[in-house]
Length: 172
Image (cartoon, rainbow, N blue to C red):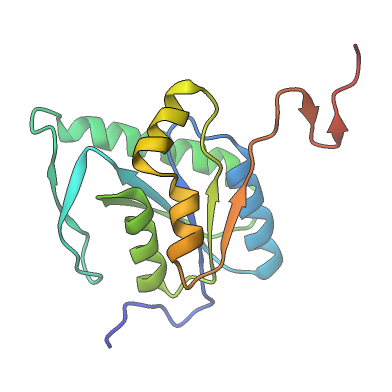
């Protein structure tokens, strides 16, 4: 089996998307710094599907919405790049961003296998009725990964609005 794995330490693969709760990147940065490993942030363009998987190159994809301009995908990736840079600035963590295509859970799983990841880190599904309906119909990325991966999967919960990082919110 050929592999595109690097000779360095096994990276952490982190699922990222626009509007994601910050705890995911905070947790990934802390863990990567503790383990002295790089982070590969994986953004999956859900409006496309995978045509061919070639670990030596980027995935070839076709859009489910051909009218969607590649500029929109580039803008989303650039926004994520800025968010990741801000979250990891001064953390001493090497990181990269990969844009993938297809089903998010499977795409992240393929990247983890290809990179020889030490762990996959994802957030919990977003709050709200729309996200709950989507998870019920399409399944949760975190749930699929936790049931179908050979790699450890860390699922980072969003901090509840009524809780601070150190416990229940004060005041009343």
